[in-house]
Length: 402
Ligand SMILES: Nc1ncnc2c1ncn2[C@@H]1O[C@H](COP(=O)(O)OP(=O)(O)OP(=O)(O)O)[C@@H](O)[C@H]1O
Ligand SMILES: [Mg+2]
Image (tube, rainbow, N blue to C red):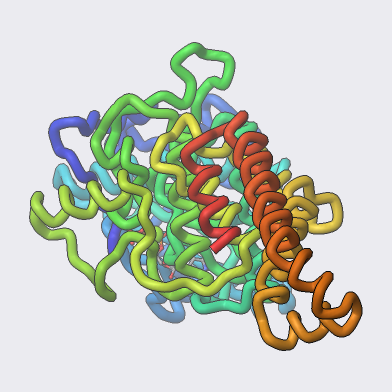
């Protein structure tokens, strides 16, 4: 589903530093005369520079093309670049599109000299009388879904690290979803489409605070969908959690049926109520550690939701130094012991060791002890977890012990 603004009333207009009519690249070049990645050229020069091979995507803000540079040495002309392009006709809609592209360029350009493998590398911004365009690395594959957990976990770590990298530099993406994640030649997941991204001065008191409701409905955190004043970083974490769930299972956790549409206010309200309840719909197949991790990301209460930096430290990425896993293993052990004693094989096994008389005496107290142990272990586990966040920990615990 395409990105939309959910609540019109809460949307504030973009306020770019410059209007496209004022020829933004020239103005930027004046501010930064050394800029070697921003060009104002004629349409003819553009067609001499780039061969447009085919359209590979389109969205609200323009179209994306696979292109080949026509100039440069042979090795340069062999590779492809991706070009995000908007037309510059003088209508209010296209003006807004150019402003959005300009905003996107300013943000991705920030990372030109300090890159991250999971953030799209920016090449240049070009403006001609007819077009405005961003050129960037060409990434051949869309993020697949229903991916094996062991493989997906490596991708998740890279993406969480990319989002933590953005947040640490004052940038929020605001539209994280599988359609905005592509795979590089080396199978590294890369976040693209910074059309809704924002950059904050991290030291300002209002940094990261917003009441905007832009985004894609299935991936919008409950507080952002409502247009409440919220921390946009936490909203990114929610979207990333929903995205991870979809990469693993092929669907989002709160959708009732495949391709559910949110064309009416009622449908959106209904969907929003589901996200607030935090109850995942249908079936999912993932390890308890992964489920616990996703529940920490998809916590309906933003205060209980982990940050991207915390997500990066989650035991799902560091299975050898996990804090929760030994307790989980004890829980499982207690459970196995309890169940084992209750089976005929288990009973016979114990009886053959201790004899019938002693077996009858100990079996009931044994079951009682293991049941008590299990209860205590779970109780301590929930208490430990609830120090950071009660509700989501309790849900995580249900997932672990079920
Ligand atoms: N660097 C790239 N390499 C290859 N394909 C790309 C690249 N960037 C974008 N695309 C393709 O183009 C599509 C649209 O790009 P992008 O998401 O940036 O545009 P958009 O207009 O903001 O779209 P939407 O409104 O649907 O989010 C992507 O989903 C992807 O399929
Ligand atoms: Mg997109």
